[in-house]
Amino acid sequence: MLYSSKEKLPVVTFETIFQKIDECHSAVGHLGRDKTWSEVRRRFSCIPLETVRIFISLCDHCVTRKVFPKPIVGKPIVSVGFMTRIQMDLIDMRSVEHNGFKWIFHAKDHFSKFSWLRPLISKEAVNVAETLKSIFYEFGPPRILQSDNGREFVAKVIIDLTKMWPGLLIINGRPRHPQSQGLVERSNAVVQQLLGKWLDSNHTSDWPAGLGPVMFSINTSVACSTKKTPYEVAFGQQPRIDDHIWKSIEAQIKEKHGQEVILEEDLSDDIIDMIKEVNQEESELVDDENTEKINQDDAAVACSVVTTVNDTNDYHIRDEEDTRPDPNIDHEEIIDANEPVLNDICMNTDPTETDQHTKIREEAQEAYLNNAHTQLTRYMSRSAKRKRTYAVGDIVGLKVADVDRTNTSSTILPCKIFHSNDKNGETLYTVATKNGIIKESFQSSMFLDLTTSNFASLRDMNTESLPSITFIQACQLYTNFKVADTCKCAGDCSTNRCQCKRKKTKCCSKCHNGNRGKCKNC
Image (tube, rainbow, N blue to C red; front, side):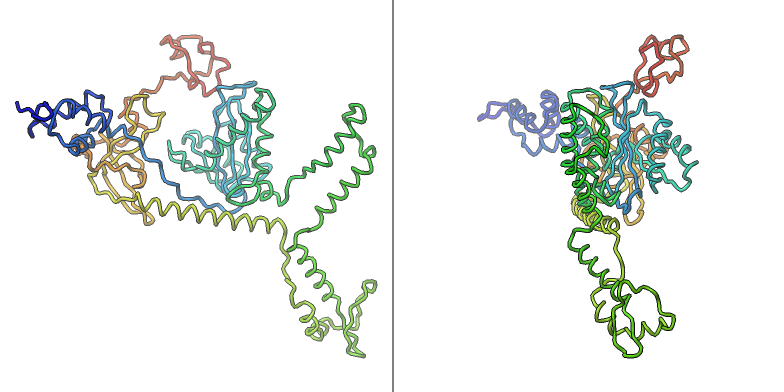
C-alpha cells in the first residue's frame, strides 16, 4: 500500500477509488458532497473533488431524495365573464369542529373573484351538491364547474346537478396537482388566515359564524387582476354601507335608553336628510365621463325637438310645453331639412348609451386580460429556460406528493421515457416505472432531469410486459406506502361485521367519510 509523504495518508489506486468513496459516503450517511469530501480527505489522499461530485450525482439514494425545484408559474386560465368558470374546494376543519361542522365549502368565480363560503357537516357529495344548488338558484349555473376532488365524487355531483342544468360542464384537476386550480387553492390560505384573525378579534371559537364576515371582506376588497372589488364586478355597484348614517342611528338608539328598534318616523331630521342625500348621490353619475355623457344626452334631446316652420324656413327649438305633433308635417322632410342643424348641434354626441354596470365589467375585463397576458409572458419565459426535449429511454423524475409517501421515503419517483407525442404544439410524455406504465401524460416542465444519473436497473428494464397503473399507484408502490384499511360501515360498528372491529382496531376519520356520529368503535 502506498502512502503520501506529505499527508501521511494511503494513496487510493484507480481500481479501488469507487469503493473508497462509497465507504466514505456511506460513513457520513449520504449527507452530500461537502461532508463526503471531508471524510475522504480525512481517510485518503489523491482523490479529486470532481470525482466525489460525480460519484454523488450517480448515487440513486441521494438523487431520489433531492429537493424538487419549485414549479414554474402555470399557464393562466382565461374565463371572461361572471359565472363563466367556478372553482370549488373543501377546507378541512375537523381539528376545530364546531356544532358538528367539520368542513368549509369554498367556491370562487374565476373572472370576478367573487367567493362563496358555507359550513358543511361532512364532505359527502350530497351535501356539496345541495350547497352548489343553493348558489346556482341565486346566481344561475356557471358554464364550467372545476374541482380537484376524486372522479367518484365528481360523478355523484354530476348526476345531481346535470339533471337540473344539462349544459353544466364539470371538469377535474390533475390528482395531487393543486396548481391546476391555483386560484381557489391560494384563496384557501387567505380564508383560513382571515378566519383565524376574526376568531381572535371576537374571542370565540365559532368559526361557522365567521364565514359571513370573512366572505364579505373578500368580496369587498379590490382584486389585483381586475382592479375592482368582486362585489362591484358582480353587481355593478359598491355595497350600500354608509357608516356615518349607521353611527348616527346608533347614537340615537343610545339616546333612547337602549331601545333597539327605531321606526322610520322616529328618525331625526338630520338622519333623514343624510339618507336622502345619499340616495340622490347614488342616483346621479358623479364622475367626469358620465357627467359629460349626460350633457351629450341633453344635446341629443334638444336635437330631437328641433322643428321647421314652413312659412319662414327659420329653425326653432320646440317649447317644452308644446309636445303635440303637427299632423301637417312630414317627419321625413323634417329630418332632411334639419340635417345641417343636427350636424352642428349634435356634432360631438355619442348615439350609444353605455350602461354603468357594463362599463365596470369592461374595465375589469381589460385589467383581467392584461394580468393574464403578464402571467402568460412570465410562464413562457420561465418555461423556456426549463424546457427540455427528452428521447425515449431517458431517465427523469416526478415529484411524489406527501400523502403518497412516508416520512423517510423518496421524494422523487424515477421514471423512464416510454413514449412521446405532440399535441397542440406541445410535447407530452408517457413514462414507465419498475412497477408499470403510468396512464397520465406529462409535460417536460414537470420533470426533474435525471439523464446523467445512474438507475442502471431502470435503464435496462423491459417495458413490454409492464401493466398500466395510475401516477398515485406508482408513487405508493415505489415508496412502499400502505393506505390504512377502512371499514366504510353505515352502522355503528359494534359487531364483527365491521372490518376494523374484527381486527381489533379503532375506526379512523376515513372510515365514515367524516361522519362518525353513529360509530361506537372510534
